[in-house]
Each structure stands twice: as C-alpha cells, then as structure tokens.
Amino acid sequence: MKQVKQVFYILIAAIVLVGALYTVVNYYGYIFSQRVSGEILEVERLNQGAALVAPGSIAPEALFSFAVAIKADTGEIFTASTQDRQWAVAKKGMCVEALFYPYPFWELDRAGTWNNARLIKLRDCPAK
Image (cartoon, rainbow, N blue to C red; front, top):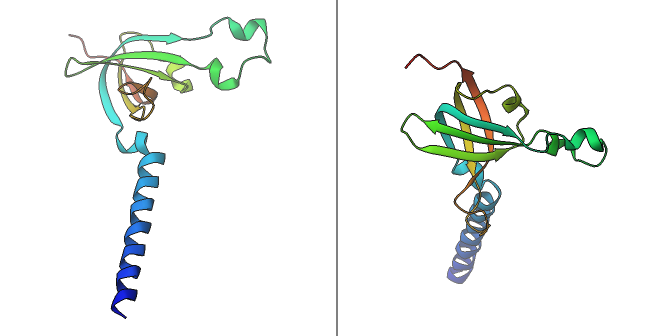
C-alpha cells in the first residue's frame, strides 16, 4: 500500500510539472508582458506599397505590420513589431499606453526583444 501511495504522488507531481511547463511555453508572452506608458517616438508601417501592386499576394496580417518605438516615462525606449491595426491611427508625439510581449528565450535569434505591441490607450501628451 505504501508503494502505491508513492507512485500516486510521483504521478501527480509529474502531471503538475508537465501542466506548469505547458502553461509557461504556451503563455510565455502573456506571463512576462510589460505595460509601457510614454510618448511615441516613431510608428512605421511596413509593406506600404506592396498591397497595391499585387492584392492577393500578401497575407492580410502583413498589410497592417508596424514597427513601434515608445519612450517610456522612465526614459527607456521600447521598440517592437506588431500587427495591431490600432497603430494605424497613432502618430509621432502622442502619448500612449501599450502592452509589450517578449519573444521567448528559446527563440535564440529574437530573444530579448519585443513583439506584438498592443495599443491600450492613446492620448495627447501634456505640454512639456
């Protein structure tokens, strides 16, 4: 009976460990996301003219690809790529609150950088 309990506890521990690992791998960006509040330094649309040349050759997500640079209130500059259509109305000099998601550390060529910046709030910056 004692061995059955030990095997049961080991099985439960393994299931919990696999579940935790699965959660971290699938939701890494959400778990380690960072909310950034500051001024937009630059918002650049990528693939500006490509959609006009060959309408069916580009995925719809690529039509709304942006590169974003935000200077946080702390002075740190955050940059990210995104496919959030809301960035189309954001202009340089406006204040913004955005959510930045990190690439996971196991994607070695992109580790330490941000992607999928989500626009939360957009407002005019107060006069400095």
